[in-house]
Amino acid sequence: MSLLHLLRTKSTTISSITKTLTSPNPNSTFSQFRQLSTSFLVTKTPKKFRKKRKKQESPRTKLVQTQPNINPHFENILLNDTHFRFLTKTKEFLFKQPHHVLRLDDAGKLHQQLGFPRGRKVVKSLQRHPKIFEIYRHSDGKMWIGFTDFMEQLLIQESCIMDEMESDRVNVVRKLLMMSKDKRIPLSKIYHNRLLFGIPEDFRDRLRKYEDFFKVVVEEDGKRVVELVNWDPTLAVSALEKEYMVDEDKVKKAFKFPIKHGKALDLDERDERKLNLLYTLPLVSPYSDGSKLNLWTVEAEKFRVGLIHEFLSLTLEKRAYIHNIVEFKEEFCLTKHTYQMLLKQPRTFYLAGTEMNWSVFLKDAYVENGVLLNKDPQVLFNEKLYRYADMKVLEPSNDVYET
Image 1 (cartoon, rainbow, N blue to C red):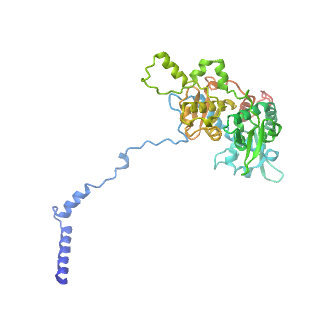
Image 2: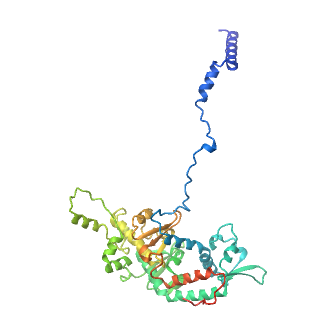
Image 3: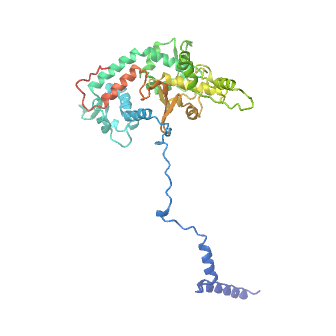
């Protein structure tokens, strides 16, 4: 076929296609194609007709408890923590500064250390507690923040409480070490959680007085670790075991570790009750070596539940945030399933707060209205401090030495 013939054929084909495309005939091939093709297009639904998707709640605000299980008293305790976060963190930070003062310009950059929201003015937070903090102009012309004279008197009183309770705090640290896997805990972990147990700021210096109990070892990486020197069997008795001796039935009902034994055993009601009882009593001592237990057995779960119960019983307010517990995960042989494990024990533990930051309460340590049954002297001091912190003017009847 000649080249000229091919060009003519191609020209004819293009011409016929052009006519087809421009033809006004509704029955043309393109028209039919256009009608068919549009049927496959997904048209956009107007905004007013679209179904509104339910907005997923953020883990920062979604409560771990659901209705009707929510206990408003416990939830309010956590709200109180939030309300006094600035007071608590600023008090701790200022106390460690020379002369208990800090330049206002420097304070504005320390939102994380002082506990006020990022981007906010620190002055507004300070003004919420006029009986605790004051702002003044120093001789250098700069603005400084510090404690009021009234607060300095309160700090002296708190220091006296720390001295009076020192032997009790020493026993708390000893018990924590006795529960740990290798009878040793990094010094930094105890320091980070000192407020939880009422341990004083200078406890690292106080340890030197108790060489019969503790030994501080410096590892190759420079990390300082507290080691237990002597095991004390009188301390290796958990609060749960003590309670069991007083009220056996109450402890039996406190926890539940069900096991599926099926109907194949053909047990009568009495024998089935005995078998279930075997998996209910939480008497695996938290002072035993949990690292030797098979990780996923009922016995290991009893150990972990009992250990957290003992951990909470050592705290001032019989409660702790999850980050306090997780920090000791390695030392206490805990797993990543701590949340699910505690959720299965609603008779003893109450989980409060949000999915992002939840807390565990020992329910039996509180009365129905959320008030702690037995209050440590440090707890009583903190409650008094919070009352003063919310006052704009100190009432004449109030005294700094009031208990």
